[in-house]
Length: 494
Ligand code: SF4
Image (cartoon, rainbow, N blue to C red; front, top):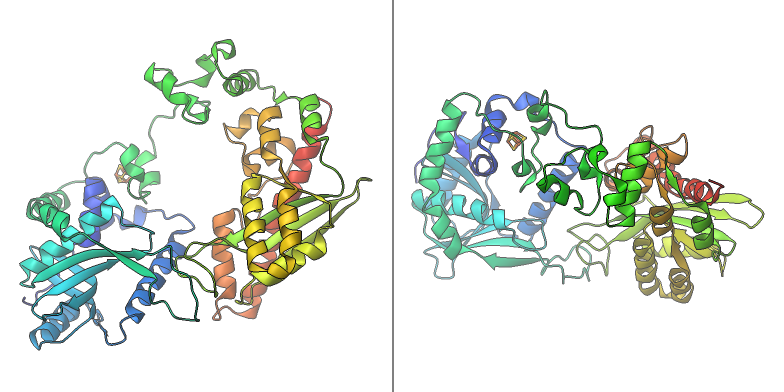
């Protein structure tokens, strides 16, 4: 292995991955990075992945991190020095270059015999995915080309069977999927692939129409750039028909929903969507909605949870990706129409489950009908809480049993064409009230999770934490108030 100057437009593992998805993505990433547009959750996803990498490294206390300071050339030189001097490993971010491609290997460990090395590519997913194989193959090709003997190459992913039993003890959090054999087959074609990628970078911006590849395996950050100026499709495309029902029409060359006839639809929901879209008159079956909700006795507890689910569990007894409620909003409606609002939010970084369970049993009277939107989620959270806060277990299980669902009532008895095929509460609310989520600082569940993580970060200032808490409360309260408004509109006279 030799140290080498890193060329500014050289290739890396991530650039090879970008090229495999789309040559234009590689070209734009190198020559026009300023036109990329990242979604709101991109930084949070990056931080979460980085944290998983840190935890994986922390399981090797003897490991050495190879810093790219002042630049990657220094990392190349330091890697060569350590390996040349017989360092026992593990090495984190060991850096190699071969065939004009530079890679940094997450974790390199010496084999027991000490002659070879094994690579672990750390991922925050619960299993190895198809595109991970390409990442491993690129690294394998570069490291072996640089003169390293590789005896194993694995994707080190999250083991979802892990449970955190001692604070900070993450031994067992990861599992390896060994991929050396299949990666070697792909690695053999990497020189040709790298040559193609270099040819693309040396040329003009490639012509490539947007298509399904723009979201597979990653949502491309250049989608807005690539779709700008393209001819607009119909205002009401057939793609608003849910559950893939539009594909049948697309295969027949029908793209405009207004070209369909509701009487030709075989399913009532599709007929409802076509009719409401063509006429502009919302579908509303008030009698049906009232009958569906007639059994919902008072008091009615309109309930919504916000939850956090992380690859690395924070609290004892928690599994990777387990949904942990950190917030709820509750509108409690009495038979005389009186409504009071109750809420719970815990942003001090401690386990929120016990206090959340206690706040629920204090706020929801025994016998109340609990109403949620897409209630399977709230039922699941209540049942899990019952096991985690056994002192309130019986009350929480009873709540779960009494939980009913507003979503199927809305789906069957209301449709406004502005929902564009969706019955999510966010799509539905603006069609029944002069209210939406656009004006809120926290606009969806993903932003709620990101805000919660920022709020519990010890580095967050008290002022910022207060602002985040207020934004979270406003968002969750909007969800339960939206349910109340939707139910009232559904039950109103047509
Ligand atoms: S949006 Fe699609 S076509 Fe454009 S660069 Fe990305 S993947 Fe390629």
